[in-house]
Amino acid sequence: MKYELRFPTASLEKRFNFYFNSIPSTKIRKLIWEKIAGLESNPRPFGEPKIKPPIHISSYVAEYRVRIGDYRVLYNVDDKKKIVWLLVLRKRNEKTYK
Image 1 (tube, helix red, strand yellow):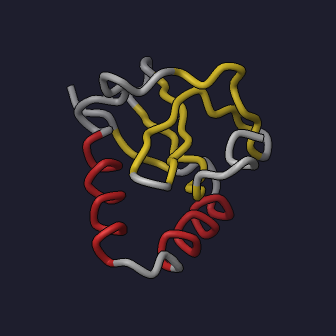
Image 2 (cartoon, rainbow, N blue to C red):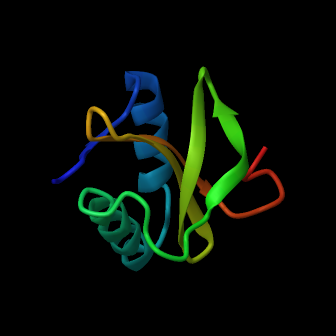
């Protein structure tokens, strides 16, 4: 069964899209979008561990991450409703998981 990709709030979606569109390389943007689209069929890809401890973003909790080069997509999964909640896109650095 496919999962639905959603943002919990319009402000998180706006921030995500703003950061996504600010990435200079269209090749990287395409890779990021392909990885995100892959979460519909497999929300927990092999080799992508849970985030320990989970990260609080606004009033939401990111328990999972997917790695795309130097970028990370932090998200959570609701198995009952079959929804992948996209929370944030960040460039990997010392502040990514804080």
